[in-house]
Length: 305
Image (cartoon, rainbow, N blue to C red):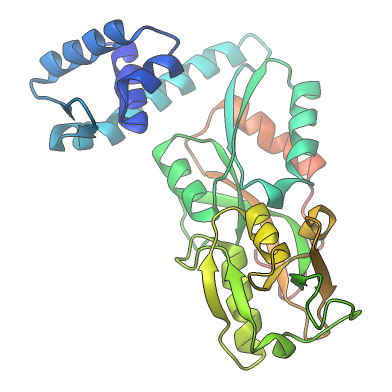
């Protein structure tokens, strides 16, 4: 079994489309199909159910996928170790981030990597929520994830706090409270709320619900939105209000206002996460650099560790 066979298999498994997988691998579709057939012959079982409209993993393909990730990760680690012996850090580092939440932090880190670690190829994967980031870390498809904290206690995944921002209300510009200098969350009890997904994958959604419950009510969420900037845009259209971190205030779309809260301060905690043991010298170099570029703020009694 060749590593390139597994690379082809992982690409098709993730894309579930031979054309997109071939484009991702910079090869024609026919050689890709031949490679998958060679792998299927080698393992003695079909890995994909194919028809003219869809591609799906078979039970054999589903069983092979996590092992393929592990083999490719081990190959990458071995290659990086050999390159590190030359005295320079080489490799690919894949960073997952949500988008709007990271407009202050990701550019600083990315510029520093390109400036100080020029032999590292940086891949940025957008629209990754905290929950998705942790899943992708564990299956090896990204190396570092920007996340909301806390992320739970798993020894396999490490994390570090990089910023703490106050929560505030965001309302349409024609809302009765739009011109207030500060408000309490209780004043929004009768409003419709817009939220990031409430399935546990979004730290900001968790903070929104915590703010409402602390004010004595459960926010009435009328729509869940996966993209934080689109959430702000929907508020600007008048579809509802929300509770968001202050670092989103500078990028509000026209038609929305951010208002500080005068309740007991609630915070959004931002961090980065990575696999504790299974990472390359390139990832280690980026993590070390991040400690200087995005240092951990002073710890308070309410700050996640």
